[in-house]
Image (tube, rainbow, N blue to C red):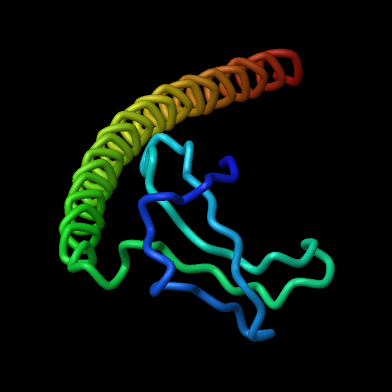
Length: 132
């Protein structure tokens, strides 16, 4: 933002801050409001009354701002829905991976049980054969 001479603004539209002092005029240099004029308290930031107002706020631009905010909200909503769908797809993929991992572990445990039963059977047959 930069201070502007604000020559285009008539003297009859003098703007005062909450301290009833003359507000300073600035021109916005932001991407969303390039060249747009605004007023703020003339005192340093530590002492100011935090008065701030667009120069054109009473000229009907509020409906334009509302429309801009609505379109930004729609874009944000769409992005949120896309992220939600992506998250759900990732969760389904992760769930599928975990289910397969669990199935593999169950198969390994089943094989280990069979090996234990077979080993015990061989041991019993060996002990019976020795003591006969």
